Length: 169
Image (cartoon, rainbow, N blue to C red; front, side):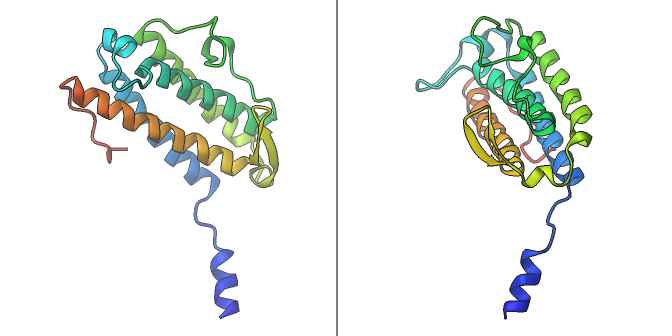
């Protein structure tokens, strides 16, 4: 029994490239949810005290940018125009959000190959305050995006808009 358990725990479930493909597929779906919002409702509509989707999208953009930069370089920073941690800089149109989304998508594709296999298992305080392995931080970023995208689905349905199919990644 011990030999079976040991062999099961040594199995690689996803390669780094497969994780990237999955993350980028989710990002593509999240982008379609963002694009489905009417301009005004993106910035004004909320339900039950939740943040507007512009705030949620800004968080997803900033976390993905700083997250991939931190994973690749150890610098948990994002470009200032994308920084959701900085209230001084805001994206003010849907077109700016979509452009920023696309910029971060390219940033992820550019930086991903710079992450060594060993780096995924290193422990580091993401954003200077959340110690975890790099892979677990990346999983958190994906989970956070899926969570906020779900809020976007609720908003779109409440607005009478059919959201993109959740399985179409």
